[in-house]
Amino acid sequence: MELLTYPAPCKINLFLHITGRRTDGYHALQSVFLLLDHGDELHIGVRQDGQLLHVNPLPGVPPEQDLTIRAARALQQASGTTLGADIRCIKRTPMGGGLGGGSSDAATVLMALNQQWQLGYSRQQLMQIGLSLGADVPVFIFGQTAWAEGVGERLVAVSLPPAMLEKYYVVITPQVEVPTAKIFAHQALTRDSKPLRIADFSNGANSGAFWQQVRNDMEAVVCEQYPEVATTLHWLKQYGDARMSGSGASVFVAVDSEKKAYELIENRPKNTSGFWSKGLKYHPLFASVTDEDPDTKSV
Image (cartoon, one colour):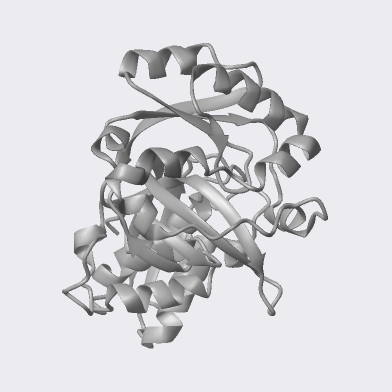
């Protein structure tokens, strides 16, 4: 059976504010997601017998708990198809780093099998299925730089200033996995950040002031609980406005040249992994999915 190759890019949160706690126990967020030209690689092929098989399952992760199999199962059940799939995942995105690796894998499976199984689901339909798998899955199907609210599922396409798209993003990950649920439950977590206005983000005249007031609200708690993250972030702040992505443990900084990005990766602290990447304007599979509303515009 021929397995086709699909990319699963990772993401960074350019900022992450927690504006409150909802009645359902989840937190209300504001963030901007930027996809990066770096991530996992998936090899997917159609099976005629309806089985969903993970060809190289992650150690310690039962296949039925793996997000790629769960995504394929959700799409199979939603569509009623009798087809199955073989899935192989080449991991390049650090696990537990706040870079959305597993969520991106799930999104890529949904988009790839939508094609291979010839289902014709729209972007909105796939995003709805993705949301049942995790709050970060829809943004990868949305497939472009996004202003996010709610639990991260309410997305609006936004355009970054050209200078930010030209940056080289250096991402460093200490050898520690940060459990997101533990950080969200921590009593010291700030949960009352003043909501920002998307209009201020999009207004070029106000962009400088906007970026001066944003941060990652989870950063202080993670750094206190995980000294490895604090040490890595402190080191990276020498080279720019470094911050943590998501709930960590990965931290990142934007630099102006490939040469500088390479130097930082080469000289990164011991016991860390790292990569550098450019931002993506669109997910590589963006055009493979159709929108129900062709008039959707960026702001």
